[in-house]
Amino acid sequence: MLLPEPIQDLINALSRLPGIGPKTASRLTFFLLRAPEDLSRDLAEALSNLKSGTNYCQSCFNITTSGRVECEICSDATRNRGQVCVVEEPLDVLALERTGGFTGRYHVLHGALSPIEGIGPEDLKIRELIARLRSGEIQEVILATNPSREGDYTAAYLRQQLEPLGVRVTRLAHGLPVGGDLEYADQITLLRALAGRQEMS
Ligand SMILES: [Zn+2]
Image (cartoon, rainbow, N blue to C red):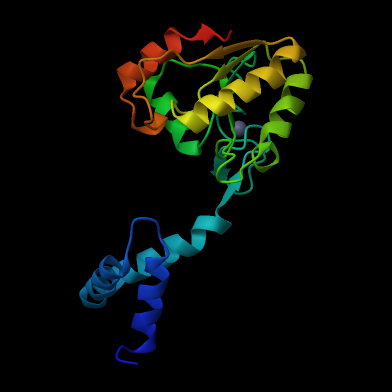
């Protein structure tokens, strides 16, 4: 082995991250080797707290601080409990919150349906969403899955599942970049999509 094991170990671990190939992993590893020690220490500490310090909200499945049962949005009494915005990922919650235009609550699916990738309804937080609707306080579900093939497919599936429960089901208006991710949409586009949401038919 040409490289000492600790170096090779870090290169291997970094290479497993999305978008980072062996070259970038090596570059980052040698950067850390030369950088002041506190950078490696801060990084190691942040990494080890990442999982232990966070938790999923038991109501909407957004990420929250560990020890909390519900996230800050769900436990905020001023939020409209009758409206739930369904998104694919926690980062989508962040994007919608940044617009300041939504006062309801969220439900995070943790992905989108994809027959090609073998992701079915049981892999997402769909059963949990239906259970929330059965509680009876939700009047409108806004489907804010990504404007992509999987996102549209997921929205169509959810509409089919949710409408028999007697709730209003709307979908974010078009105008969002097709194939794009919600989290990258600018605030004005998102606000417009939210305001122009339509009944699904
Ligand atoms: Zn929550």
